[in-house]
Image (cartoon, rainbow, N blue to C red):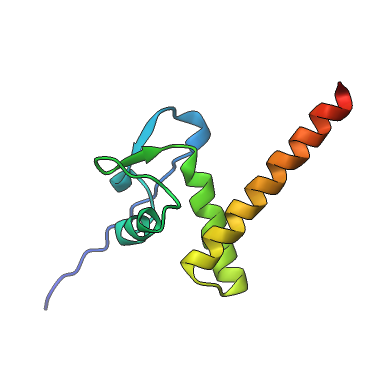
Length: 98
């Protein structure tokens, strides 16, 4: 009888607690997915590393992709439009305070 072992890996990684760059291998995302996101210009990977603030963008993209059923490019466009709207909202609030 063959014995099989199950190895469970839990990534308890929080991007706001780390600064600088993060290695692709340290995250629960598939490297192929990250490479595809880099190919469409959604994230920037250098030497298998990217900045920690991009992790939230990736999580948002995956949620939108799953909930709306859009492809990666469509989800990336939605995220970028949402970010632009947030920037414009922040700019309006700053101008109101002046």
